[in-house]
Amino acid sequence: MLSRQRRRVSVFIAILLGVSGCDTPNSHPNIALGPDESTTQQLSQRILASYGLDEHDYNAHFLPFDEALKGLQNGSIDISMSFLGLPTNGIKSLQAATGDIRLLGLSDHVISEIEQHSDYQGYSITKDSYAFLTKDIPTLTAYAVLMANTETINNEMAYQLARIMYDQSLAPLPHSQSRFLTLKNALQGSQHLPIHPGAKRFYEEQGLTVTLPVAQVTAMGAKQEFIFGTGSQGGTYYPLGGELTTRWNEQLPSVNFTNVATQASIENLHSLREGKMDLGMTVNVSAVNALQGKGIFAEQAVENIAFIGQLYPEVFQIVTRASNDLSSLAELKHR
Image (spheres, rainbow, N blue to C red):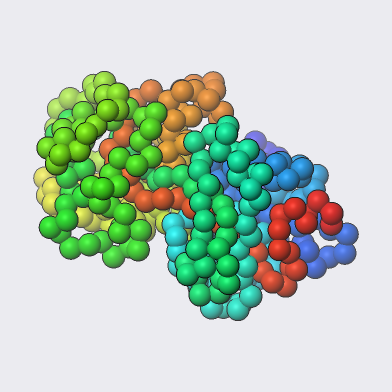
């Protein structure tokens, strides 16, 4: 734990000083892998390993996306890897500030390898996604989903949460990713996840066929205060979560939802298991691992969670700057 704290302090100092990794002769690149023990970090390291890179080939920085952006701008970070909504305003703003942003793609081999051993799927960031792109960028995607604590979210509350999320009679939420909050998309990313019976009832009333296993719910009584774990303030989860929280509070005046900034998927799933949260945003792949007790959840599975609905596609985006003279992760092995 102490070494991890020291590592975080050194990263913070590097960002403050604006020390660049690629600008220093014979140095390793500084790569922001996402927050420590996050879904982004796990996939980032898995991708780098697929290119034959290990921890001795680069300097790993465990940063939320907003801090990684600052590092990209001041030169202390050379590459940022993160799951984000598409397009991402932070990337647009960074391009406006620097004028030399690049997105790096993944090789067909790496995409195929990860698809075969996980629920991640290949995805193409089309060149019209950002004004600075001149070609499509091959990468990976998953789905951001809303998971509920089955010990605190009862059937009626789950029904209302799903109903309000996909109520097309209400004004659209301001966030760009809210365009995916439609009944057509509601069950995307739910494969291998149990659905909350309250949410299932709503979808079936709307004419959807739900074949998912149904979660066992133990929540009883009329709880009034709910904690909603989202993500870092510089990413997509937190602002979208804030808009959902506002909408739920408006439509359900007898209860109160509080949007809490977190390190996203992994922290939210742990907090749901421990009863510290009632709702949490997560990548669907991490939710499946949590339920099955795999990966970082091998020592203790998260059994008290249920699927409420899909939020939007999470697209893995690898950001660098033209000044780093890098067009592929494969080139890092030869530097």
